[in-house]
Image (cartoon, rainbow, N blue to C red; front, side):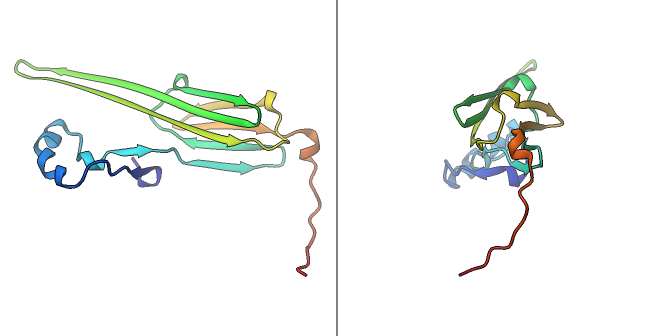
Amino acid sequence: MSNALTRRTGFLPSVFDEFFRPWNEWMDTGSLTNRTLTVPAVNIEEKNDSYELQIAVPGMKKEDFHIDIDGNLLTISAEKEERKEEKDKKMTREEYNYSSFTRTFTLPEEVKKEKIDAKYEGGILSIMLPKTEEAKKEVPGRHIAVK
């Protein structure tokens, strides 16, 4: 996972790295202190007729996402559970992974809430926030003098 999308949680001191090294290597999970808390990266682009949010969330399915509007708040969340089990004659290995996130954004007044649309392709969740007709009109640029 990209370092740009993650941050270190630091929930265990580094002394545990040495203690857990044999098990981490055997389980192929890496160091416990290198486990990360993910917060998806978000790009927000303003276009003439809409805003577009693009959220980097690879490895999810469209069914994992929940997108809700409450007043002027847009909340995007996702949950994913994975179970993996390997059985051998002398060994059983079972892993469980749970990941989730929630992001909340304040919507501008000029967004048509009833027309918001979302799609998920190639690990990117795109949310289109169309503007009202009044907001689509370009405001002419002007220079503001500093007093």
